[in-house]
Image 1 (cartoon, rainbow, N blue to C red):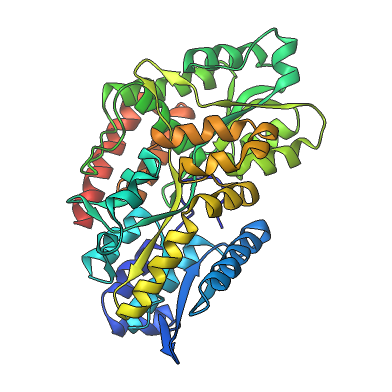
Image 2 (cartoon, helix red, strand yellow):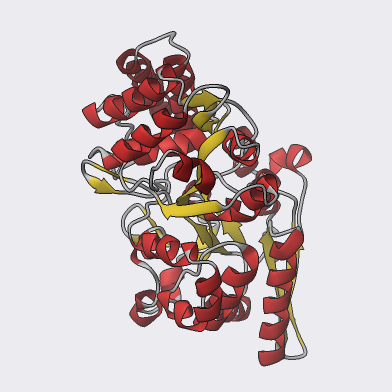
Length: 432
């Protein structure tokens, strides 16, 4: 399972082929049916990627609790190894006419599933009161174009700043609250093998955490890289400013480009001041540091237009092949997973954030020991997820290419983004 970036690398071609019809099944495989009804007991299947570590044990624990409280419902957890496999398996199951009852899905998957009528609107079940208990950013992420409620929240996270507290103190600096201060701090420690931050922009086949960082900075300069209709806005003045910001850091020796979580690696080795990453990175950054120095955490910095944050993680969709009894049982389970008590347990054990502020009252001791959870959860009110359009992932890959070009000095920030805009516009057109 991808633990930091907004999404893992996904087989987009497989999605298109599998949804084309049952003739593609030889290439895509098959899956179990959605569920069953027998002797008054309803069995449902949840296809998910919480397949290892505390993610697996936490979901199993919650599911056991649910079954004890609802003895007439059996939940079968169909766990797969990663999101790419999950997308392929869900898509193949749809083509085979045997989808699970519910499954994790990113926004663009849900849009594609809805277009083929493979999932049902969650508005068939959720009430205004159900929605009122969610953080605003989480709530907004559940809708497809046309203000259609097709998803329900599950595992959500936002980005925070991790830093080497000893390195900051040695330079008489404080944790940055603005991107300007972030740059000042990063440049202050640069040199002799140390950088302010190392990022991985990704490639055309899949954007990395560095691309998400760029999106956040562009938004904080006033213009998101995607419009509300999913249109790329890569060559806006805000985007050019954001790219130039990163180029300036690179030219000052304060930013390095790498692969495979370079921010975590450099921070852990004492060679990097910052790692800007998901809250789900907390354990991994601590593990990399290994107690060599105290790790600080801070909210994502603000830009001239204010603070923005990237909402990561998946939602749950309900597949249309399920019977009415299975759908009703699935909705009972989905509501249970999003309840305050379930979300408090999930947040304390999985590394993700609670999707409802109601859970925070049950997490007092945990938050006291992990104060980053409070300011990270607060950002769920302003965080923005990926637009729910099929071309978004491809266009984020175009941005990754632009970042690589600008940061390597092959192109200016403006030229790299102009080329990315042309390519993304073409990618959008070919996806419609």
